[in-house]
Image (tube, rainbow, N blue to C red):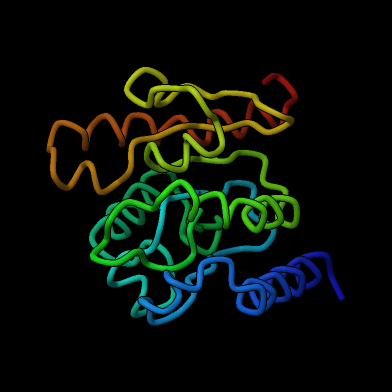
Length: 195
């Protein structure tokens, strides 16, 4: 078995374990299914959002609604496709009425997210929105640090605004596109050992 297949097997086992351990029964009861993650188990770049929405809950994949279409568009701008990266959320079940995930829900899923990171071992972790940034880079303000790579606990993070923000605020769209354009530059620096 090659390394990618082995990683995929570990991810599949982790997904089953979440269903068995059932960290948030109340969220599970209100959701259609677990939305675990999508993309390459050997991805250099991992995107982490906050929680699934309606379309994600229906299709079982993260970022498949309007925000996901914009994410795909931005990936295309840096010559990547979804299958080249890995996309997930902190919380793996849709919160009722698309409300923000609660602190205890984020905490319940954090160990599983950390295991996903340990299996995939991405070179760059891109947080999408303040919820995922708060969990992984506590104490920062997204309006101040978006687009600035941060090294923290052995990982390199790039905090970005959530793609959904650009759907409600046209001015955000260009900011996100500009920040997104930094991704290949940062990955190249990490690969060369200059970051």
